[in-house]
Amino acid sequence: MKNFIKLLEAYLEYWKLLGVDRLPAYPELKNFLALDPLVPETLEELEKKIKACRKCPLHRTRTQAVPGEGPCPCQIMIVGEAPGREEDLEGRPFVGQAGRLLEKMLASIGLSREKVYITNVVKCRPPGNRTPDEEEMKACRPYLARQIRLVKPRFILALGAVASHSLLLSREPLSKLRGRIHQLEDIQVVSSYHPAYLLRNPRAKRAAWEDLQLFKSLWASP
Ligand code: URA
Image 1: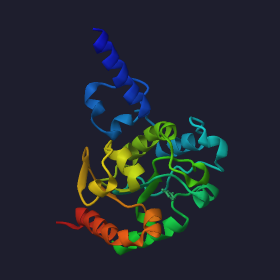
Image 2: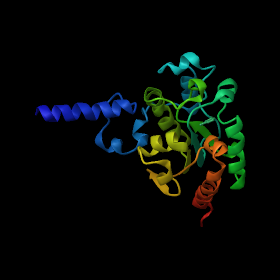
Image 3: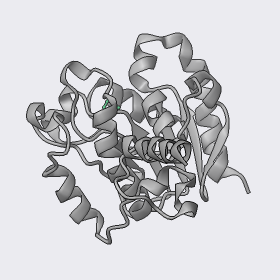
Image 4: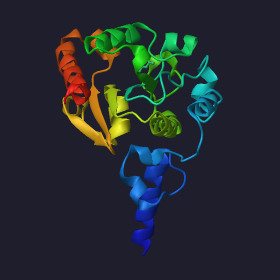
């Protein structure tokens, strides 16, 4: 019995880490979307909540939160890591150097940023653009889960390890996750390199291009 209680505590701790403060019914636990707080609200209401959020220390250093932007509903969603300096100043996702590369990547598969919903796992800029820590991701993940429920994408492009690990509840290296189609309920997810990584490592552009072709094939196929 003692062992069972210990196991149960560890299990609850695991879900707390992922941002779930109540224990959902078993079938909800299967995937990232289980983190949806199930609060009925519109995307506009959710965005207001994100802008006023003080759930983690990043609210103290941000200029503003960056909820995301794009049509709703929208078939295609792009998920990055967290806002950088320019995003923090403008309040819009992917408007800096990485954003310009993302726009080129989208154009190469016939998309423009106006046609897709763009957001990040973490909605406030981590100081110095460091990788968000566990507490910050925990606080923010339910927002992304709710956004996905509201925007109802059929295809998600996860850019970088933070987005891929979060959405796929996986710790596999990005090199193993990319180049494949993952399923998140009825949503098809393709992982690829983050544009900021590609700016630093141009040799990975070839693999990213292959990922984009794979992503495009999802809706271009008959
Ligand atoms: N990098 C991200 O992951 N997201 C942004 O919005 C900008 C840069």
